Length: 137
Image (cartoon, rainbow, N blue to C red; front, side):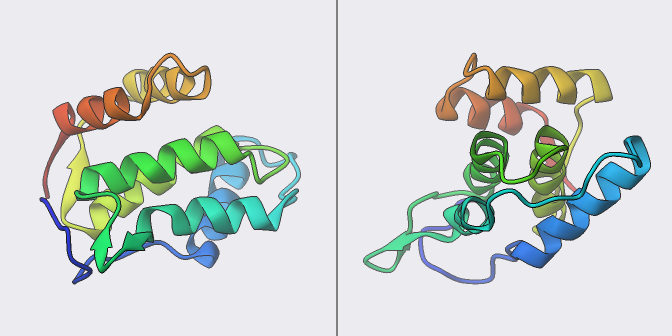
């Protein structure tokens, strides 16, 4: 789905991402802290996919926007713990909010997220990988 002009894209909010983070921590490692170490970095990562210039989205497709959530949250490291988990969850939930779903296995999702964090995948490569593993709901 390509979308240059702002229209009916469902975006995540900071509160959505905080809720995803809380759920991921409580489900996987319930003793870890839920601390937000840098709210500004969190807000920047959440707002990144919504950026426009001259009335057009900078990220021209839903998949590019999903990649921006993944890369931004993983790279900005706004939480004390669980940044990779929330980055992938935000990417996946955003796609679902917009009528798409990922078909990655858990191992593939983990590998992709780690490759993003280690900068083994750049933005374009991440978009291509997500595109290969995304289908309509």
